[in-house]
Amino acid sequence: MPADQYGPRLTVQQARDQISKARHLGYRPSVRKKGVATRNLERVFSTIVTVDGPSTRDIAALLDLSAGTVSALVKDLEERQLVRISAGRAASQGRRPKPVVVDHRTRHTLGFEISADKVVGVVMNLAGQAVLHQVADLGPEARTDKEWVDEDKVVDTIRNLFNSLEARLLGRIRDQYPDALDQGPNPVVGIGVSLGGHINRHTGEVLFSPDLRWGATGNQKEEWGPSVHLRQRIRDVTGVDKSDIVVDNDANGRAAAYQLYGGGAYFNDAPFTVVLVTEKGIGATHFIDQEIYRGATGKSLELGNTLAKPDGYPCRCGDNGCLEAMSTRDAILAVAKAGSLEEARKLADEGNDQAIRAFTQAGTYLGTGLSVLVDLLDTSRVVLTGPAITRADGSSPVVFDKHYDRAMREALQEHVYGRGIDPGNVEVIEETGEWNGARGAACLVVHDMITGHLGL
Image (cartoon, rainbow, N blue to C red; front, top):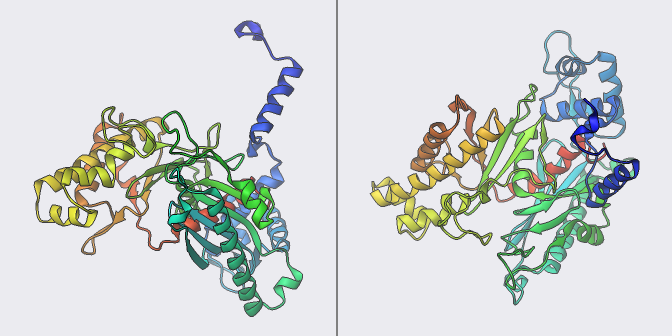
């Protein structure tokens, strides 16, 4: 059967036009098209980041590479001051091979998390440790007369935080490693920025952010500001090259932190999903072959803004009945008739039927939404994390409260197609500290180094 029976084939010029358009939109060729040597370098670096003290022999066995190849790649990473050979004992047994570890001494990433009222900044070393952090309130004056957050105020705040954190970092390195700055590369590897909303990962443009009210669409008119080319703005005030700046969704940042440093690195490359649950929002990130899945405009998953009930509660995005509107704080408080989540939890613990129903109903909505996610993606694991994770009386962590968590799990198993997902593969992970989101943003830089979007 002729190939062109299904439609006219492209001319060479049409093909060139499509490539040009893709480049204009910021799309990049698949990193899987890169050379074998580059891909192996990234795989070795990823293994050193995610495994505790492997030797070159361990790395070769894990990646099915020759010992000689791994040794050469480790030497390359050493010369770039990304890893070093430690004097300690490697994870493997037998002779005393030396472990290869991330060089956490001088190379760092900076992460910034933007919310409606503040910017949180973190300096993270390549071992995933947040060594410095700083918070800057935006203040009420950050809101414009139209009620969206002034982008100039946000950018100025990031500039001030960057200058302060960079100065503190340089002072810290001088005190601990006096000669490092004279002989090494720039200690700031890159900048990661995270916020809630639809961000074009390819171009660094914030297309839509309900918290900041950036990116007016058909549902928002005068109350919202325009989209913001945030990566370019940050480049202008920090001097860091745009290719070393990552602007992404906050759920993707939290997910990258889990994947790199929180137990998410599985060498079978099974797809898995991380769900971020806050008091008023839900985000999700899907990993395929250990890399964040992204669609045409850089999004991973917009689980929270899928429709759950057409005539449901108003959502901050301007629509009605979105999953996050039906399954987070405001929905719980509306049914529980409570003034805060703490009050609602107390009422539920005391056996108040209305409060129990509030948590159960909201949890059922999230569980049903997760069942759709599992059906569509056939994911191997679902990991829930974020500020909405809590625990009471020393129990295991749960989403919002025990009634919510139980209803969520039951709805997921009830509505999922076929065998669905093993209940043991639905994990809830507690996080502590207000700087976790900023650390996630910093982790995005490391993720992109590993996957080839930022050069090693």
